Amino acid sequence: MTLQVKPKLIIHGGAGSSLQGKGGLEAVRRSLYTVIEEVYSLLLAGATASEAVVRGCQMLEDNPRFNAGTGSVLQSDGQIRMSASLMDGTSGRFSGVINVSRVKNPIELAQFLQTSPDRVLSDHGSLELSRELQVPTYNGLTDLRLQEWIQERQDNFKSTMAGVVAEPELAESCNAGRGTIGVVALDGYGKLAAGTSTGGKGFERIGRVSDSAMPAGNYATSYAGVSCTGIGEDIIDECLAAKIVIRVSDGMSLQEAMWRSFTEASKNARDLGAIALDATGAISWGKTSEILLAAFHNGDTIGDTLEWNDGELIGYC
Image 1 (cartoon, rainbow, N blue to C red):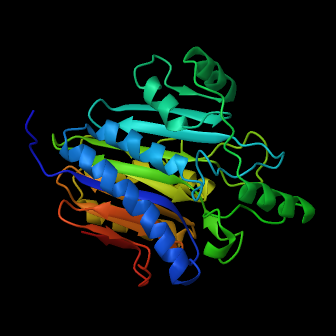
Image 2 (cartoon, rainbow, N blue to C red):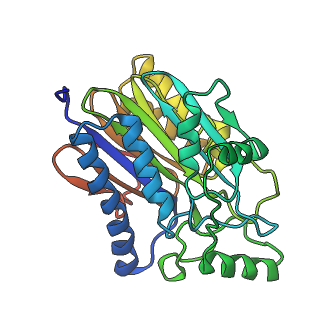
């Protein structure tokens, strides 16, 4: 099938405070660009938006630098519990898993659930699903995340969350980040999809649910798609992803929907970020935090937001 439009792609690896030094910035940039290059080539080869989103999320989940899949943060009891969701804008289907453990790629379970009558599963249901699918048991624990947890345990978990980037030399402090990964794609057939995956805040109460497996943090229609990052509770309170997408679906431009939504979030003192695409191919991103770890392909070149810190709430191209 011949491509009808020029594909567009945007991904993120979290949001937080400044990366230390040029070395840290370049390391994150290389990680993000590797994903952009492979996933965009899939879109050019005819992959659907959902296929591209799943592949991008897999690659980000597999990179221990980011807080999803391998390299996920530990909760207060020292366990990894991950959440992920996928939304296909054409079918209007949302699917996801909440607080799943011992799997390598939670986004794959969300993908399977796209065709299930029961499309969002919690911890026990997700575990049973992984057994049914014979998904190999996997331990995503890294030494850096373990040391982070041990340090916080010694300090009686005074930090409210773990670092967005799992390398001490890359973040200013272990309380610097809001770790999530996400992908939004517009394929060559004009279809949109969004996916989001996370290991959580880190050090949180057992059973806490993030925004990543909710429409608040991940949403798409045939008009727009959004993936969020930041403090999950703030994203849920704003219902950010769904709010932006619905505004576009109701006739706002993506730029206007992002600006209005982030202006409201800023007035409400929220700490969050988001990446977005619409059906026309417009690309946008926004943050109330200091930085947003995002990269995009606009159909011609690759760009990123790693050094975007000009005081504006949103950016676009």
